[in-house]
Length: 302
Image (cartoon, rainbow, N blue to C red; front, side):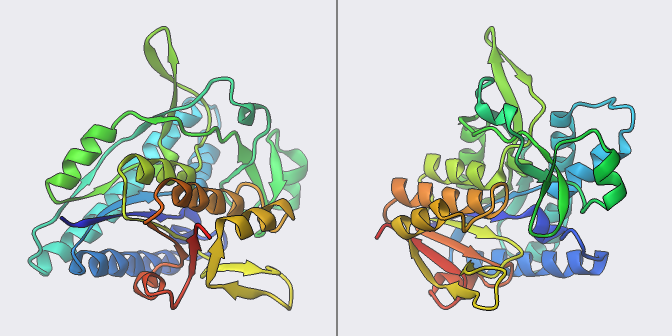
């Protein structure tokens, strides 16, 4: 039976806040290399992806707020999923591999009373200039890249398309799903309705990996590892990090809310639930080194 990896790709990795289009193409090529490497090692792969920069740009274009935030999340699932699928499918066909790609618009149930709705933390869109910061009627927070708009990011509870995703994996599809953390919905009188939020894709990816009992959760982003002393001259990559050590670092404020903190939380939650699974943080193109413990950061139970 093939092992299953959930490969979570950051929206900032696909479109770094200060990147050019050529950078995005290079990152996507490294992602394709990771996925092919996993398939060649006889893994099944599910790809999830972020959408922070992309959904923010779409919101900027919608000056009259014609569409709700969750509709833009759905739009980015199609846009980004299409790009990943087209590139990956072409490579699979050239290599005469049996897998095919499938892009699934994914809805995720959240709690309408989640406190996250009152405290937005999820960065979306580009880095803001000082004029926009002073004039915009948005929630804005300082990130490691600079000031960005932030929106509510409730906890994912249930993935509505879980059984569909599971079946497609059984059919040897490389499934691209959970884009932007999934379209957030709440249960209202037995019906699901959208709510304006962006679920963190790393927490959603962890939920997906746990529900499917995946053998690995790989969070691939624009940082090559978890660092101690990040942003200081003494910064040092951490190759192995226990759940206990990660919790202590988080309590000490080492991981910024809305960016690194959810990634660490996602990997720790996965390790707590799937004790034999591999929980890895790395940059696109480095998945094989990370699986061997020679790159990125591996999270362990102890």
